[in-house]
Amino acid sequence: MTASSRKRTFAIGFSLLAIAIAILWFVPFYWAISLSFRRPADTFTTAGLGIPFINYAPTLENWQRELSTPETIRALTNSTIVSVSASVIALIIGVPAAYALARFRFKRPPNEDLTLWFLSQRILPPIATVVPFLLIMRQLNLIDTRASLILVNITFNLPFAVVIMRQAFLDLPIELEEAALVDGTSYLGAFNRIALRLAAPAMAATLLIVFSFSWNEFLFSLTLGTLRAKTIPVFMAGAVDTRGIQFWFVAVRTLTAIIPPVIIATLAQKYIVQGLTFGAVKG
Image (cartoon, rainbow, N blue to C red; front, side):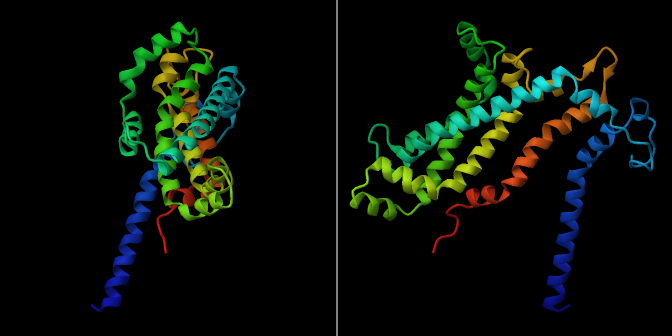
């Protein structure tokens, strides 16, 4: 077998493996889509692969019922407000902190220790802080409010924003800012006019990643947002009643939770790729 034949065989095998993995990954989503369009009576009686119009007659009844209930609307509203607010505030606070860690030298503690401290806060097990946060929010009278969830999400996502944006600023050529300082611009002016504009893709990627973390947060939403501040992840877990698990409603709620982040990520895919690969190639 020639070298070109071996390369072709390897490429075909790798492509088939990638297709198999993609199909395996898509099966749960396909099953949720199929269940969401079935009537309750068709949930356990549909034969075959559950293909609409072939194995069963699809209906929008489950979607109409779910999206018209006040609980679903409230959960979507809460998740949107909490996620957007937490991600924006985390970026507003984290970007200047990241710039300071990237451009200025601190003696006590040094920059590396400060960065490591921020990173340690991100990998801290959230379950270890549930009781302290619960006691704090009770003292502040913030139990079952959006404000409590926003504060908690900012706390846990702020280190992530600082660490990512610090590396983004380190990858920027410092000569541009030094030239601006020589021309009479202040440090704040160099930060606003040069660093922020050059790091915009990384900021967009960080914003979307923090948004996804806040959108998917479950533990604190369950303990702090019991009723009025219930978010989509907690709402999804509530599809169990005295009749058991209502799989058709679980499917609708699952897709409802997945669709908004997927749409946002698809629309901003260019910025995510640019931000995550920022500074990867120099020359």
